[in-house]
Image (cartoon, rainbow, N blue to C red):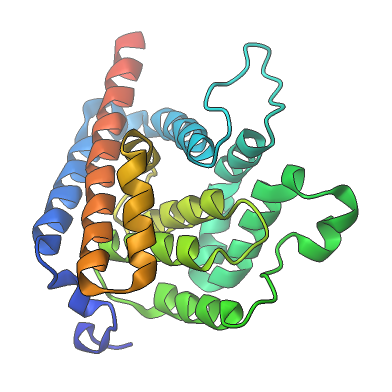
Length: 252
């Protein structure tokens, strides 16, 4: 798409409260990036943010949030979320070029321990064979590649659509939140991956699930509620980034 006017996501920005919420997210994330610790020490704070994101994402899908003292992760949901977190940086170019390929890889990483060994070859990275699943994934891939919508809006749409479609046999929540994180990186909303919106979703987990179910309904009011929830989670995630930076700065 060559113009915002032709963008199918453009009307979402006009929903009540969304434009202001988008502006608040951008300001909050910018403040996190401007923190003195993040100007030079951002690789360390981004790594910590990534781990916190994985833990929160696992908890939202019923996995454990705490890392074992011995470092041996035996919870399959948390193990998958951590594998996803470790590879997100390498998947960013793939996400920009071939979003569906990146989604397939995210599913392999997230669901390996959730799928029986004898089913992995047939299931991992492969969308469910249900009517409409492939078509909606292809549409989402085109939106990721072409939409000019504000970063927070595209992030929320990617996240909500993947939760609604549930394209894989398992680990759809972890995949959806990882794809949202990739979208935050690729749109320039959070280019260093410092924010932890997953913590925001977890702190408001009831609202998160209700708003996600509403997004699936497709009504304007429900779409607006989901967008506002996601923006609020990103604001909380940006504050989490500042907390991480302050803790890192105190140690140096």
